[in-house]
Image 1 (cartoon, rainbow, N blue to C red):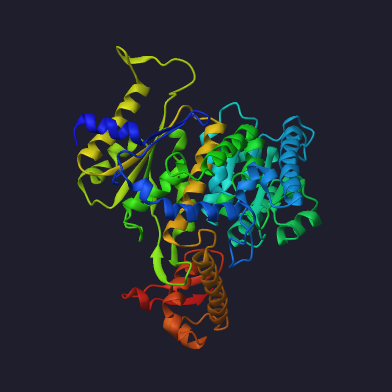
Image 2: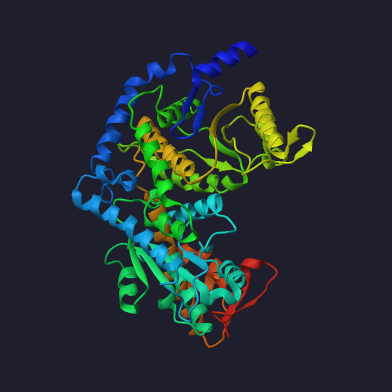
Length: 530
């Protein structure tokens, strides 16, 4: 295709949304000229389904619940007055609480002001807040955020060492809808122990975001935590960023949550329009569908934001996209093994990392470039006559885009005029809606996650087996045994490998007081209780 033809294709397929400060270019994706027209019957079904979802239909039959994250930024559209009032009251409570923390009315146990925020959560209860904190945080923020986002003891020790002697100025925010998520529970208990070691009372530094009457909710009431904020069953974790899950830590950090919600709401208004030509989320979903041949997720989405502050966006999208679209069965119960893999780095770092493979290696992906036009607040010094460092960044993006296209590789580009709370809210809403539309096109339910629940059940089984393994060893009075012998002893001969791995971990830590005697063949190692 010659340069003039490319320019004409670009003009035809560039969508400008000045109300969002956003441009969407899909011209470097492969699709026939009449594609958006021929897909209208399929998208009409997607538009109807989305409208029904926003009207309060039972979108998650596995859990018997509605899916209402869109109501969070346009409360009057909720299907009941009670839900609308709850949303508005929660936003007001979030802003009021943050203001009282910032002015010192809500203060730490030993006085002064809270200057640090420790968020304890996992998955959607951490990924969204982490992304927002990194994308929009500044050195002038009234509170500096830290995260316990895993049950890794060393990881939590690292965070606590970073907080150091400022723990007494740290507000801990525990986020868990059910209150029973083990990773979050462990992080909460580790945090509580840290406060105790510092001579501080954990409840006087703790806030909960959780479901009403959950295990965590009851604990917070019983211990007299500083505050509690709601999580509703109609908001899934991966779409909870515009609920108290994302709004409370953002407000405490000092981020403008009104602008954030406004950006998401404006994008929602645009992406409700039933038009394959002007709806940006529909256009995203349609080109994803085309590049993947209509099914199967054969191509990964490589997210390349040319902005350091958007580094964590790929991680955020991994959960939003892969947990929503990675499904074994379609809506009719047929095995389809759908999905859309997401990974990414940042430009221009990616050019020194994996762009070589993207251009010349296996053609199993499409790229989503994300560009921010404003380099920084104020002017930039020239790195050479007439060229700034930001000019180089823009040049590298354009060059990579061109080099990929010349080798027949697919890409689309999202351009933001500037990065602020409003544009970040719009970006999140854009992908939330695109995922919903794409799910309709491939015929799966985007709003349940049976694979996640299966993994949790399997982990519980392993921990139950660990109890029997260690009890067996302790009953032997110091006599050593192999994993196979222990498996026979406890009636778990079909789980020898798991028994062996449990023993390896137990012997590598002081906690369980298990000794390992190494043998030439490592699977014959012998274990004993100390």
